[in-house]
Amino acid sequence: MAYQELSSATTVLIESAGLDVSLVVDRVSMALDEDLAYGPDATTDATVPSDQTVKAFVAARSPGVISGVPVAVAVLDLVIGAGRWQLVSHKPDGSALAAAEVALEIVAPTRGLLTAERTVLNFLCHLSGVATLTAAWSRAVAPAKVRDTRKTIPGLRVLEKYAVRCGGGMNHRMGLGDAGLVKDNHVVAAGSVAAAVGAIRASNPSLPLEVECDNLSQVREAIDAGVDLILLDNMSIDAMREAVQLAGQPSGSSGTSVGGRGSRGDVGGNSGVRFEASGGLTLATAAEVASTGVDFVAVGALTHSAPTLDLGLDGQQIATPSTTDR
Image (tube, rainbow, N blue to C red):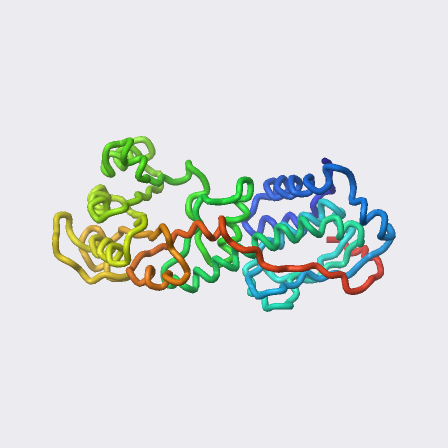
């Protein structure tokens, strides 16, 4: 289906968020197609005068973190057309919103705004929900960092991982080719942790590499193989703390060192090893997990289970049609 063009201001807004313009247009167009595949907005066209203009507000109905403003603006451009509506004000992505606080103020033709409304809110509510949940995890695990996973909604990975960044989190790999992650099935196929690490280093020596370990023997093997990042999968608090301490011990040592963040830099040749906790983590236990000294906490729920942030769009008054170019 053919849509309008983006304005130069919208293009700049998308690019300044670190997003690809063509990807945003593609995802927004797919979403709009779901609403408009069966014809134009029959209800709106029948009930709203064609020359009517409205001033509208997108406001938070519950507190959270806003994310997705550039995507929402793209929706309005594609439906209404650049220069035919005005973004009066908006909160930058990553901003905290109080309940009832306005995130966007818009002046637009009523018909176009109502046609675009659900798609605007679908993106804003979902991405803001991801950002809001990420912010809660970021606070809970500090000074460790929360990272996302590849457990994303098909087609929305780039936007969801953007929302994670808006919430103060960090992105893990974007796909299967930008980093290596040796998991249990890879270890079984290769024969051992060391064999799997050696195979990846031989084929992609510059590829960032992380190894998943579910016991301390594997952790020791990964450290001895020179792995820089180790994923501690479904380990107990005590086991994670001991794994972090292992990084400060010379190979073959059975002694213990002082655990926790910051201590490893003072000990031996394994001081560069970083650790990530994963598996069965909850906000209730997040601080305890972080206290083990891990550098990162991997949370698939940031994207696969984030509740939407309750945002609503309300038109409060009819305004004189705006001709302000965007």
